[in-house]
Length: 226
Image (cartoon, rainbow, N blue to C red; front, side, top):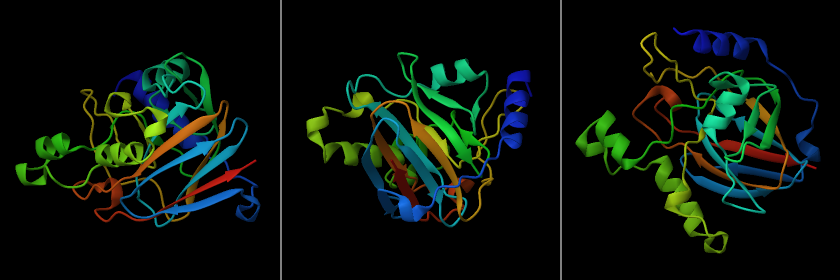
């Protein structure tokens, strides 16, 4: 394991942080069904909580500036700025213009993936079997949600590397990626403060072929506070 990976893993394990926010005070509360997409506006200064309701459920997420959708989450800028590959309390998600988009202010899981990407028909075929090509995927979810909001002007070319909240993707000593059982549990959550007005695009991952969802996708909860 290289030093960057080792440092990131250790830091993630030490930065668990509870939140005092009460769900009853949330201005937005939505349950995303298992395997489904979701698109929602987040205002600057609002706090977003993503909840893994039943445990071991990956939530794939992309973020876009509402003022200029060409500005979007950048995995590269985020990893470079924090010097690590995993996200947890204190991590700042940065845009392709290297501006702060969101800051993680609370996290009861402790480790979120930036490298594994979103499953697609192509990756299902390559990783698993030819017959898996037409299984539902996160990339399909992203495109479906965007097609339902054509006024945003976002499409296939706007899908870049995403965050996988609650997903466990260890890096091997040789630099490879592995998909492992999740480190989350029922009710674990992550909270992020929006540093700009955003679109949040979610795929509540439908993947059935690796342990990221415990081979059985479940619902997730999205809450927003002013």
